[in-house]
Length: 159
Image (cartoon, rainbow, N blue to C red; front, side):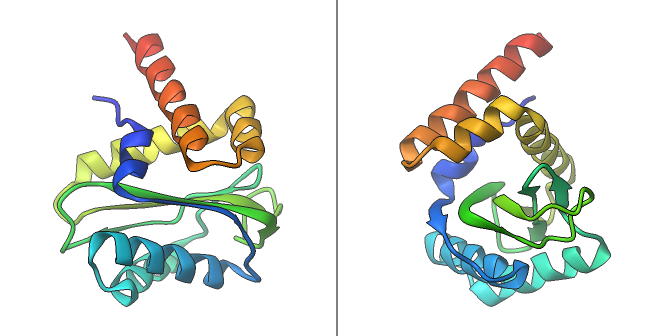
């Protein structure tokens, strides 16, 4: 079953044209925004994401980072997208700064759902046309539409 990225963001947050000085600051901002939206402790989110980052960078290249973690107090996967005006160092595989940061949070018990959501996010952000469209978008609604269209196209091509 494919994960609809726009649904992850409907429950989550989209932060547009933010400016951050570092990977840590980007994670702090996304953790805070998701914590506020979900009614969860932002420090718990931050700690879980940083713990995962210490295992290896989530900077996947082409200006994209996908920090992620599993949380015990979460009931369903949720996402937060931050679009930066200037990229920050996420220790990406291609050594380029990341300006599109998609934080994925999933329940501790959602092993398969977490992996499916992570794979779907990765597939979407691997596409140059999706990255370009997201970089050109200036409204949350437009971003959701871009990711929704990509999710529908991916589902149709997998069928």
